[in-house]
Length: 638
Image (spheres, helix red, strand yellow):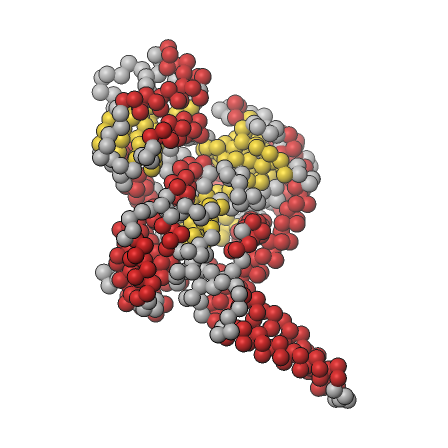
């Protein structure tokens, strides 16, 4: 929609008039001057392209906080990303039509590239000519296999695992155990952008064309504290910061100075402040849906102060940030009493349902992971704060690299096309995942409907690596498997050899709690009874279930506890068998007060190497220290 008051429209008209004049000059005016004709010939396409660009920018919905420069940078960034995505998607489709050839080429190329490294010589990469020889010659591995090599790399030794020098040592989240350190190369990051981000952006625009605009995105990102290895290479999470690209930075509502804040509470306040200041915000983005959910919870604590800040155009003087950062933020914040009053009116209504759409009427999409352990927070967002705003989980990725792409944004549950160009995949049938060296299948050998443990050979020197993800093959795209993420390998309950998986328990729990309407399940986790001190009344092991519901003033009943146990029995013959024999006692339910899982999140981040961007709620707790956080917040036991 064009507005005559928009300078971009007038700029386009001016270029159009000049274009018409130049065409008239070239075609109709007799002139023997070669220089004049040459200049006219050069200026004609320039004016034509300029006119098209001006009209194209003018027709797109844009954030009011954009300057001329930031709007231009935003336009160039998304236009470039769209074109790269179009070409990358075509290449992906071609590769998916012949996965055997693509995977073989990828594997043998990596082995050849790294044949002269210390690791490549040890495992005789030059002798390997087929995938079968690779599997026969190289064992399946865990992170412990690589730790001595990574220590060498951190001391500055080159060509240890890969021929390429790492640019960072990425720290994993440590959800199912301790954090690990993995090398990451520059080439790996570049290919993640080309093969992953650009492709899913192409899918996003194809499915949600209303996002092809110049509206800014509220990105919840917390800058981690980095440390350095002995050789000077940074150690920290490999989540890409918006500040890494000057052009991409203009896509986000938070100014550059906001991403320099290291403390999470202050950073979140600033993200919300600049996000709320922009009524025409187009998207919300975070690594995980749990981050967006906790941000909306925080909004209810901060909104009054934020509205005051927006009214006077100045950041809260009580906010604990550096003065240099405050100065830059204040320069970017314009007084807007009208917007401040709009926020107050929305927040005073009291209803949480659909508040995201009321605060940002033009918000079209949420970009965030919503599978596995993030299904519950995504479900809460859909039913409360963000009702009416679709959630798109674009990538299946980890510190090890790009694993899958969701090219079907509207599908739920989210499914991912395995990244056939990024990883060499092997698959262990889930029934053999407890074996040390089980036989594996290749990508062209898996079957629809079956569950597998993934094994990868990646770009940063991990070969036949078991990183612990369990997935289910739900379809094929051409020849390439399409998977749903199920759970982490270590996230299951096992007190008698029953091995109740995270996904199975979650299905039983959500089925049960759906009958508790209007009460809602906010969060949960489980603990095996052996981890909690026995008070002397337990003759057989059992599961402890910690539940956080939206109203902790009303205790859960014994009947509700029994519903959970009965539902789990109906879904698991093995669990039911142990229960009937008395080998496993009934589930013991602990209702915790609202906010307990936020306390657990802070405790975990403070006591690990993971950053706030990486945190995943562990559905099965493995440490007594974490369990103690929950036990001290119990308000009702059944």
